[in-house]
Figure 1 (tube, one colour):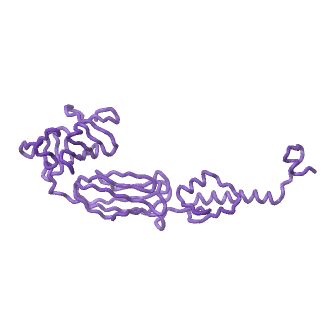
Figure 2 (cartoon, helix red, strand yellow):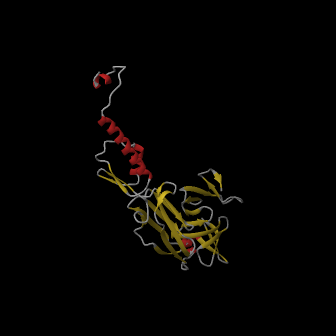
Figure 3 (tube, one colour):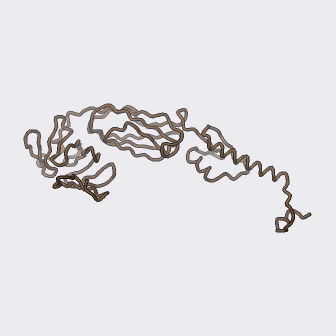
Length: 283
């Protein structure tokens, strides 16, 4: 009978006899691989020791585990994203009071594991969300007073899939600010009183002020909420385009905050208000 090396070197016509130990090792490798595959498909909290296993795990499987479960030394921990473990947190309070016209900058995160997607409900007009891996930010200015309840839920997988955290509740109390004077947003030398609450700005045009001094009616731009920290520099909330920024130096250009794009005021158009550079069209 040929020796095993002779058979490996290409002698044809003889059957190779594999030792019992080799067969057992092959079966062990298959069995352990099936266990690892089963563990990755169930999100129960178990620890799989692989430091002494003579197997070669499937790379894509290990990659999917590493994206969610931290690994220390030679231990892989599979984890269920649940209220008992991973939650949404913030270094700020979860109940905030603002005045109309004040800006919100609110950061949150998941710990100890990082969510790959966030679902946010109850977001009021004027507030935008910026979401990344395990971290999120809410920012903007709410144009109307009121009490708002925002719910934030983190998910293990993109697209709101997989296990999730308990909802994190952010309460916003936005109070009216009667002390705001729209006229103070403009240089006094560049604005004139037209009577009956109408004013004309040399660069911004003709507009009507309301009793709460927060909303204006522009002769061409229509209803807009107005806010400013610097004279002749305006943040304007428009129901169609969201927050817009312009100034005496920029006008007739408006910066659209939600999309990071520019609009051009078509002040002589009877149908459209802006030219949108992102789509090269009147809007």
